[in-house]
Image 1 (tube, rainbow, N blue to C red):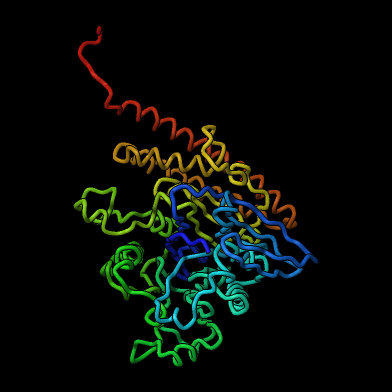
Image 2 (cartoon, rainbow, N blue to C red):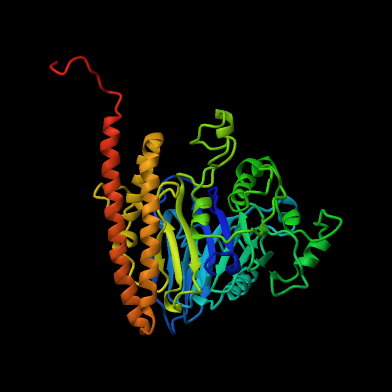
Length: 478
């Protein structure tokens, strides 16, 4: 099976921990290279049509039920080479799914239950095999767990399921074993490419789910290194120098943003997965984590505080290979038909805004639905437009960052107002009317954001031309 290094960052927030009572499930989808073009689509519901979904990266073939719900996805454009990787979206039952956060098990456990790399379920098809068939976040864990039992898993994956009440995080770590934990309503969680779940309470099935026989598997094979407790991370995870430079610092910085008074060490293997904070978490708090590069610390590669060695010490959260940064938000203060919103950035999230897409707006704007494999300078594609903006800002970061920050702040104000004005209007509408209305209004919003973005890009290009070092002055008459 083709397997490139995948590296994502996840932030999860329970409904009583947010400022507006919403659940939030967020992740950066980071790929192997800086350019893996994606598009945003809606897959239609189907009925009385049993079918299969096939992986492009191995020989996995999943049998699907005869009836499936409508659902969203953000697949790769070059799916035959790169795999489909639908990554994130809501289905018509207002259930969200984000997949996957790559996680890596230690060799001790893999020796006892190897990954099924040839025919096991993988990130390439996991959304298509699961999201059309689930009615709740908890249902998502149970459904995918049955698929893993039947087909095995080709890789280690952390998978998010969310709805208006719950956020669940499921970690599949070996060929057949997994654990899932419900994020408490008053808490948040942060992780990045390490096994995250810690102590598992097998007497609390309301907040934990697990693969059949996992306790017996661990005991039979002498896999628990702790004298006391059952720490999933300690049993199944890794703790090496790679983790300390690639993974643990991202978890450290996420807690630093949401819990400034907590002083963790970025090299600590036991940084908590789940924590509480003394303030209510906002949408922009989550965006701040996903778009960050260790601002305010010596480890910021764009900063001025640290030495060159410190700036290169840790892998940032936001990268040039972040293809799709998203926040799946379910707002309980809006009509249910307009309560699911995927806030999505198709550029490098440090420099580009999160655009809101309602889960029940079926008609995706052509600028997101059709993405060419290569840049076309007409910039009709949202993916290429926002990635071009990212390149422009970073190329003269010191000179362009102020204009970009102003643009991002103005964009948030406009987009927050847009959601709050549009969503309440669906109350009392028929489902077909809801989709048409939300789709039409979204097209208008996308066009407005394209206009604002291209205006900023024009200003930056003109400013950049004035910064050229190929200039020379002697006399205005020469």
